Image (cartoon, rainbow, N blue to C red; front, side):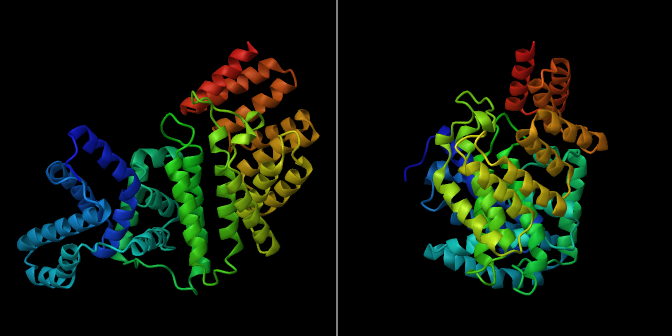
Amino acid sequence: MPPPVPEQLSKTIETLYRSESGRVLATLVRLLGDLDLAEESMHEAFAAALESWPQTGIPDKPRPWLISTARFKAIDGMRRRARFDGKQRELALYTEAHGNEARIREASGEGEDDEEIEDDRLRLIFTCCHPSLAPEAQVALTLREVCGLTTEEIARAFLVTPATLAQRIVRAKTKIRETPIPYEVPTPQELPERLGAALQVIYLVFNEGYSAAAGTEVTRAELTGEAIRLGRLLAELQPNPEAPEPEVLGLLALMLLQESRRAARTSPSGELILLENQDRSLWNREQIAEGVVLVERALKSRRFGAYTLQAAIAAVHAEAESTAAADWRQIVALYNQLVRIQPSPVVHLNRAVAIAECDGPEAGLRHIDAVLEHGELANYYLAHSARAELCRRLGRTAEAKSSYEKALELTQQGPERQFLQERIRALQ
């Protein structure tokens, strides 16, 4: 391949970083055994690509080149530091055990096996989701290391300061290194108790992509796609692939059903389109069909949980010809089950919206006001936006305007701000 021009090279490497850095990092963690060292050497490898590829051209297989380059840079860095620390013998043993084998593979053009690299992502997830780590640290570390979100993006999603989020990540890395926490997929005996954290992480990765906290776009397809891919891997990992845990199927179904609407959720100019106004011909019918089959399998097990119930609600929407034609009685019944096993304020809010569709806006508004009175969603813009919409339907214009303005104060997401501003202008 001929050497690219600088502008093309910069764009190519940027694209490679977005698509491959997670896989490169996960493999480097396996090869080097240290998160910080793997991250540092990965960035050095991308910097080396910027220097080398203008002369040599882009390799046919960039990912193995990046992994190999990062690995050698890590070994060279360890060798230099060992000269100062007096640990040449340990480094020599490391280089003999790992460096020679890598050089042989590089010379033969083999590189890392694709299937092994894919497994590395799952290993890294289970390392980041180890029960020895605090739950908030598990999620933050996985979003940072597996999915490549910046500290600022994760902090915004968690509604904490970047400094607080950075401290969580540093403490988690330190605990992984000092415990040490093994970089491996759990055994079949350990898997059930480790599954919950992994599912939660994948779910939050999907949510960050489905309703992006950062940037000017409503969705981030690379994150929703990554979450779905990780969900598939988790399903394949089950001790009995023919009968995986129902909640693994439920989460995968939920993500597929939600992702099926992505093309219809925004206008060509990037404006947000509500569910009732979406062009359902743009919905991805293959994803809907797969999601429905998965949720039915999970429900038949009678061992399902919150993810499967959310997927069942999404399936009712997906199979309806319009919002008005949806079986709202069934949706409310599913929410009634969901609040019993996951009585979160957001679930109560969503149930209130379903009640409004089923029993009228006044009934829904009473439930939303009850949710807001508890205070947990006082700073959640969607609660105020939902209240505003019901007030608008009831003709209570002043209350609708006030609630829309409160929602506008609480969101920084460009398309959502534009949507709320349009709603306020329409009231005026």
